[in-house]
Amino acid sequence: TIVCDLANVEDMARLPKVKNVIFMVGRKFGVAGSEHDTWVTNTVIAGNAAATFRESNIVAFSTGCVYPLVSPQTGGSVETDATIPVGEYGNSCLGRERVFQYFSARYGTHVLLFRLNYAIDMRYGVLLDIAQAVFSGEPVDMSVSTANVIWQGDANNRALLCLEHTANPPAALNVTGPELLYVKDLAAQFAKIFGVTVRFKGNNSGIAYLSNAARSIALFGPPRVSVEQMVQWIANWVRLGGRTLGKPTHFQVTDGQFLAKPADG
Image 1 (tube, one colour):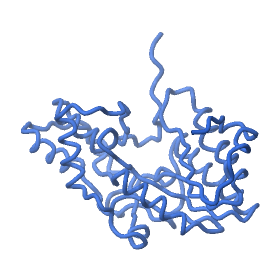
Image 2: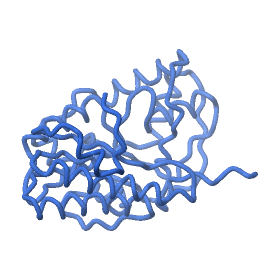
Image 3: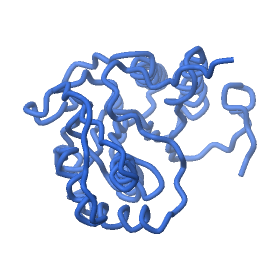
Image 4: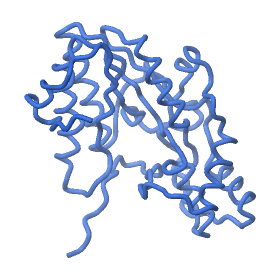
């Protein structure tokens, strides 16, 4: 491990130069009023990395939040759709993409913009959020009725494979599972496993952050871990009281605001 202030370009310049770079730096959550930290993390650090590793192949993690929210009937946003993000986070992530595009054009760097939508494991993610609500007897929020997910291991595998698909100008690639998943169906599956009755709250907005991953699936095949397997793993984890990261995804957000309100006092 190398300790480095990534916001300091001189610090970053001391990092070893390598052929391949997976750039995963990003900020999504925090407290309202810290938007400047989000922008520095998602754009300034990206610029430092793009300049420092101009000779490398770079897979730069991005997000489906660079697209507008869409109806499930669309099948999800595709890579050629317009990037019209909502809110500070989505706009800062588009800023990160633009920074990598700028340095790619300036230095000829080969880059792939890795637009990931809801990677999960047993400690974090959309399925965990739903499972915890069902298990604890809390109503499941139906403000957003659909979501995409992909197992974190599959997402990591695709990120490594994408090193062979970097390009100049940068290519964009949606990375998620092949299915549009319905929150109501997932909640019912968890309720059946837990032997409880599920309750719901909220009115369906009719839109969500949804990505069509047909291109990445054509390149790499379907994810190895199925949704059914993820549901079983996460249900068992919740039932056993397994450790979580304590970071809800806020996948129900439709206004682009992922920062929490400051605590009173």
